[in-house]
Image (cartoon, rainbow, N blue to C red; front, side):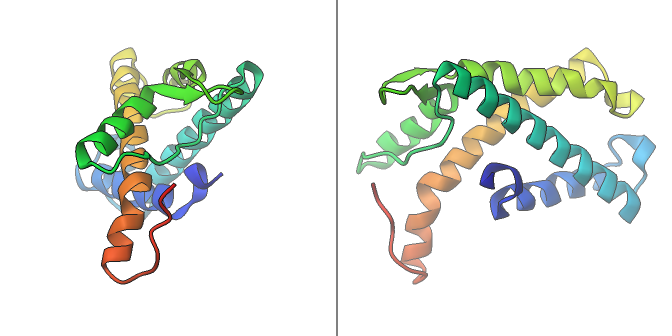
Length: 163
């Protein structure tokens, strides 16, 4: 649920909607607060549908989509874990497996959403770009979960909950 409406996701929505409003993409929404709201809502529905699909399909197949922080002490090891866990998930036995539910959910959501998107962005090419951005967004979320607790701790904001 935090991946959908948590602070990180809500902040990502503000950035995404702000960027789209700044460059007026899609142009059908305009460059005003109402256009910002439409862009924000479109992103939120996309994230919600994708997360629900991944959780539902993943539960059926025994995949756990949650990110678990690396046990590595090195930056390189931790960064590698961030990238690796963008494409892998743990199964019921705790073993890593391809994140098949994610492979279905991210592109599935982006192609399905063409049905209610503005005409200028409801294309196969745009759905492909959104799919790539969806995986990059997942990777960014993993990086945030991996490194933010340590950054916050160094800034004096509390303990670092290392696994």
